[in-house]
Length: 221
Image 1 (cartoon, helix red, strand yellow):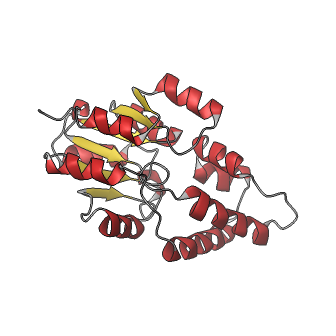
Image 2: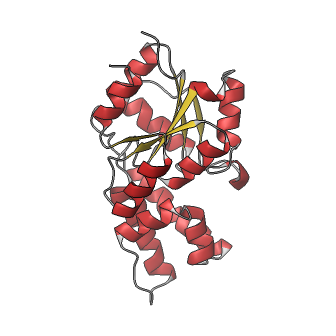
């Protein structure tokens, strides 16, 4: 049976791997404590809400108003956490994308994690590297939610918009997919914040509450 989509465009953090509670959030709290010691720390749920909208970059630049020097300090703390902790993939996710690739599918990643971390995680857990990776190392105008990653993937693999599916847990991925007329699937298994769940269900082409639901859909079971 033919695959529904020729190409998966996968988010990494909290879509493929369990990383925000153990890596991104605690590293951000540590940075805030050193840079804004008099301010109340942001809760995990509020951190996820800000990452949902307006996005992590806007949280840093527009809401907290980090200076360039402070941004660099925050990035250094974040890199220390990502270097020392290898996140686990969600149960059944590895088997899903391995089977998708085995059936001839193209696996790509568009993430706010760095390419080297994504390559490490896939090498350790999946036994293969994605066919293309667009991570935090890119220029800001080339990162999600800007359309560059998807447009480049479509061009590189000679794909029509209807032949790719974007899977992400947050709004920046949804916005990017929309801007490129690519179908979007919401990964609803990493958090249960009601307003995010409601909006993603309303605005996505597909909403999957579990990896198993995604597995059955993408592999036509």
